[in-house]
Amino acid sequence: MKEVIDFTNFKKRNKAYAGANGNKISVIYEGEQYMLKFPAQARLNKDMSYSNSCFSEYLGCQIYESIGIPVQKTLLGTYTVKGKKKIVVACGDFTKPGVTLQDFASLKNQMIDSERNGYGTELSDILYTFEEQTAVDSVILSERFWDMFIVDALIGNWDRHNGNWGFLYDSVSDEMTLAPVFDCGSSLYPQADETIMKAVLEDEGERNHRIYNIPTSAIMKDGKKIRYFDFISSLKNEDCNRALIRILPKIDMERIRVIIRETPFMSELQKQFYETMLSERKARILDFSHKALMNQDIH
Image 1 (cartoon, rainbow, N blue to C red):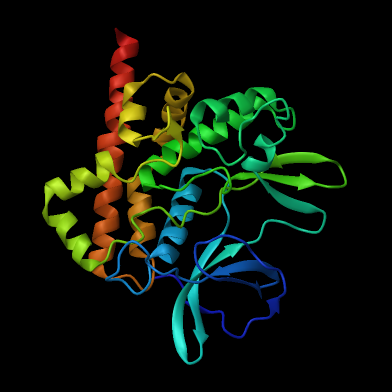
Image 2: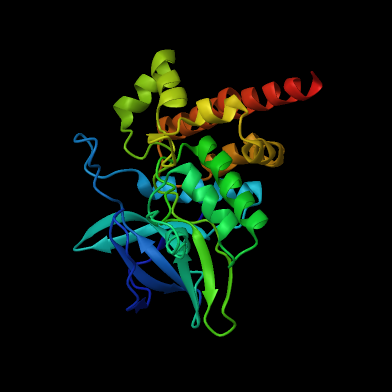
């Protein structure tokens, strides 16, 4: 079991963080700055007082790290507010003086010859930006996008929009590099309570619905949000196919199970739910598509 950290009395910083997914403060832990994220209210599930977004953030980032994709450091702990102890996730702040985070939307907004909105998530517009922008190598940019798409399909991330991935901008050198992956709080069914978890584990139809239909990607094609299974298994996008071939061998389900098993605060039901859904999403979306791709190449 991982060490449980009480962040309550650590030094705080005045840095503020935007975003709608829960309250956030800045703290210093072991000489490093962290964004402390508090659990958001479960807007879509009125039976829950708070969502499981802190677990989603922690586990999503830990899974990214296990696959070998640069990602923000995450730690689970507690923070006491007015005598009430809350479970929080600490996210490493990878910015520093002179180096700031710029999201992909801001890069997309630089396409001054286009009427495309920076936060618009139509796939064709995103791919257009990859080719037209000059700040980052287009191949590196495309590979990161599709690598994230495959991992987000595994963890069921429904909110990887243009505002929660991007770059580190160095104001001295005027250079931009890819930022570590961050903001995985909308993965792993954060508003699933124990009743939903039990139903999903006991009913194949409920599981199938949460594998094939929901969650969708935040990315849109022809005005509709992409279903991960439909898009990946279609094998129509070569960059997506190449990402599947790159990423799938790096997904170690036994290592992921250990991460889940060692995560504090979670019930056995919750751990079983995460293990089951990750295993089945890998098998039914990624393994299935990879097998079809290999068969296609053979023929």
